[in-house]
Length: 183
Image (cartoon, rainbow, N blue to C red):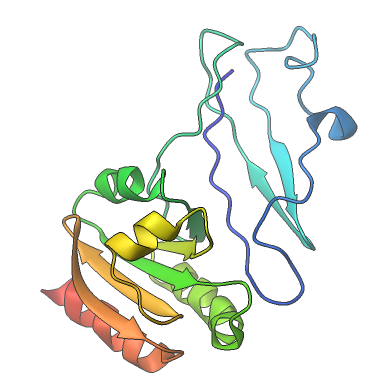
């Protein structure tokens, strides 16, 4: 059974952007992984991030030993990315507009923008919304993208950055997305 896992969470004060709990043993929803016999049935994994819970559907595979976290451009939600997953997801987005929220956990304006960015992702179903925690692990990508302040929003089309909005300016971000979508 291979899993394609897309996780999103708000990075507001009530939750952590890291997975705090992922216990298939405890929820009993993956008997195939635990020696059960129902490997070909559709299953769901509950991933808890702080106070949020998201259902994720695994992708069937011919081998139980194969587990892959695929690069999938998902719309209608915000997907957390890393230096390793960002470019593959941008490539998978094809000709869709991609909006990247570059934030840090300690940034107050970033926390204010998180729920607004989430709401924007739910309304713009033709756009891929991503977020990148500009922590030490993701520093190489943040440098590559030329981040100077947080929050910074990079808007990409055809794999290239075409617009940038800095600061907690939701209206300016919305206008920039519309301009890129119509071009």
